[in-house]
Structures are given as structure tokens and as C-alpha cells.
Image (tube, rainbow, N blue to C red; front, side, top):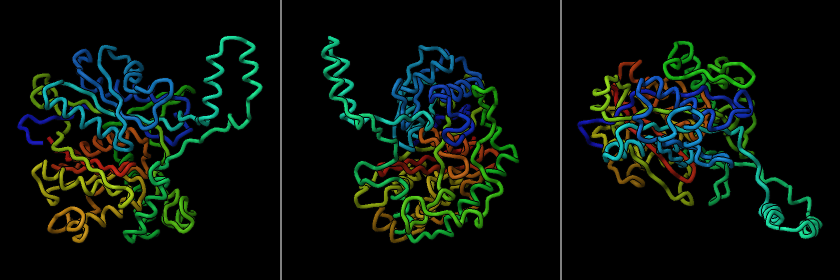
Length: 427
């Protein structure tokens, strides 16, 4: 992305991220999404009537309203005249929302857009089998009582057996966790290393809250029971390698991924407002940061590790931003699993991987762990699939400002062998 008039983030907000089926268990995806959108607009000071478009990501949309972007707008109380689009790129959905709005701004289609995402794992419902669906669909079409009674006589209890929600790749038949376990094994990432990484991330997130970092962009959410949820609920400030080392593997009997070194299923929402720098100046706004570049990649999941996609996108993002790895001051990586994060680091630092897979002369670079997720990542904060991308954009933007640094790289792996990467620049 090479433009003198940068696309900038002028405001943003997210809800606290909460473990699924707990404090946000009775809130819909639209309600959570509406809060993030409303707060983002309120913090900007922009008249909502001049917002041109909203892109919102979700991975598991509710059956009663699959365009959750539109439903979230209605819940937000903002003008219903704003066009809304729902995006699904698995865990990179809200990152793609940002990329889509950025592209529309740069192409001149719009001037001001809101991008974000939401996930309510608590709202995901079990599905009937196809046979059960056909049975009830057929009875709904029948006109006479006799026809319906005759059809009901053919009912089988098995029709009510639910297909429980799950996270499995249709192509490989493996769950995300199984694929991550195999990835860790391929790159030689051991259990102890994963546990140490996860514990460190929890401690960094706890310190982020203690220092007031997250108060810059996390908004409290009132629940139906009258309480207000103000903080992420899954952070364990007192966790230790000793405490989680005894947990059993979750996905493979001889695996290394456990509940202690993986991100939890989570509810939450996030959003950012974007416009050109010149538009922000015209409106008298002070941007938080700029989007320097956006890049995506995809791999053949029959031949390569499912979650390695971002490594293929990183060189593209760096080239588009006109920078090198060594120019980066901050690295925000999505922590689906500690094993996936550490395997990604192995690939970034591998000359062999760079030459054989990326066509580069040498490794992408060396990972400086002190610059990586300094305020914690998805393992302690949680991972509402559709909301994680804009959570990371906000965290990178505010992180650069707090540390008085210049450039951050955001790396997100996603199901289907997808990878999304962005470079964010301080202002």
C-alpha cells in the first residue's frame, strides 16, 4: 500500500472478552457487536450520518440473522441508512473487514467506514440431521390434518439427534487443535516450551490491565442481570508452569496442546473507524495509527500445516509497506495455540523454510520475544473468532503509542489454511 494520504484509525473499542456460556451467555452476537460499533462511533465524535459503510466479521452467524453486521447496526441505535456487510474469513474475519474498508477508501468508493467483528459462541446452536430437517420441512408443506398425521406416524426419534457444533476442517477431517498439535510436532515444539509461552502471555495480559493499558479501548458491558462486565474474564495472573503442566492433552493422546496453552472459546466484539488522513484533518480528528499495508495468503492444507499461512503473507506485507523485518518495533501474533505461535516463529527464523517455501534468499528474520504480544494475546484474552482481528489492530495501535514506537506487524492464522498480515504505523 503506497499512498501519501494514509488510511488511519481514528477511534476504536472492544467489549471485554468472556469465556463462552458465562457472563455474556444471554447476549446475542448483534447486541455485543452493536456495543462495539456504538462506542467506536461515540469515541470518534463523528456524526454517524456521514459514515458510509460497515463491514463486520463473524464465523458462526446466528440462524435468525446471518447478516450480523446489519443486525449489530440496528442494535447500536445508529442510523439504519448505513449499508452493512458481513464477512467470514474464519479467525481473520475482522482483519478482512479492515482490509475491505481500507480498499474501499483507497479506491474512492467511500470516505468513512467502520470495520470490526463479533462472535457469540454462547449463541451457537446444535443442528438437526439432514433427515430430521427434511422430515420437518415436509410436514410444514402439508395442507391437511390427515396428511400431517400420516407423516407424523413415520417419525423416528433419531431425527432429533443433534449435530453438536464443532471446529473441524471439512477437507482434512481434523479439528483445529489436532492440526495445531501436528504442526507443533513438525516444527519440534515441545510441551514445556508451550506452557512457558502461555504462562508468560497470561502474566503480560494481567500487567496490561494493572497498568491501565486496556482501559484505552475496552468498554464495560451491562448484562441482563444488572452487572457490568469491565474486564476480560479468562486472564490468570497467578498461573504458573507448575499449575498447568499436569493438564492432559486435549486433542491427541500423545499431543502437547492442553486447555492451559490454548485459547479458550470466547464471546466478544471489537471495531475501528477508518478514513483517510486528510479526512481526519478536515474533521479535526487525531488519528491513533495508520494502516501501512495489508496482505493475505493461503496454503494447500493437504500438504502443509493448517496454521502456517501467515508466514507466507509476512514477506508480502513487508514489501507492500516498503520495510524490512528489522524495521518492526512490535509483533502482534494471534495465539490460537502456543504450539502454533512457536512453530510460526520457527518458520520465520528458518533459512530452509524461506528458500524452499517462500523463494527467499534467507530467513524472514529473528523473533524478538520482548517485542511480541507485550500486553498478552489470545490465550489469556480469549478468542471470539470474528472479533480477534480488530482486537489485534487496536492493541497494536495503542501499543505503539504507549511504547512510543513506530511500526507493528499483525499476524493471524485462520482455518482453511489462511493467513492475514497487516503493518500498522504510529502517527
